Image (cartoon, rainbow, N blue to C red; front, top):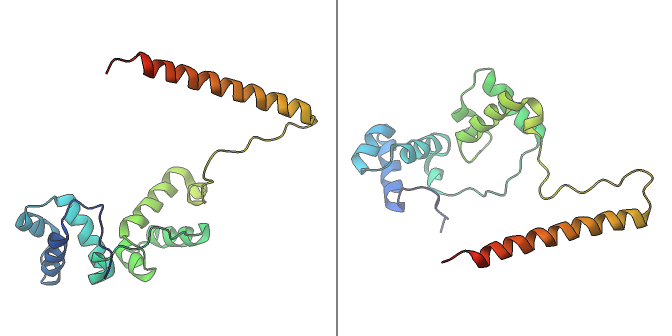
Length: 162
């Protein structure tokens, strides 16, 4: 059995009925009125349905990672006039909204915004000419500050009446 989108406010039955109505030619506004459902949620489902057909009912893996070159190519074609729905279909994207987000990021941050972001804490750079003893002292000082901060946070938690 297929996994169904869980992030939507629509029930599984509402999604199935909405897709059936889309296939009969209904628009998302009419479907949202008919189902007494959120217009926003139905519109998102409608755009996924236009890109993926019945596949709109099936959740795509969220683990898919796109390269910088791939995103840049899709954004360039979108900005050249191709529709986000056509691009989502061609590249089998989970939603046309992904193309919109990439284009928005590109407009706001340029090409650097499309590059993969490093996850987690940024490693501290070793200071040039620093000995191991100096590095350990610096790390020790940072850890003392963290312990002091956590102690204060814990003390504030104990003082707060419940």
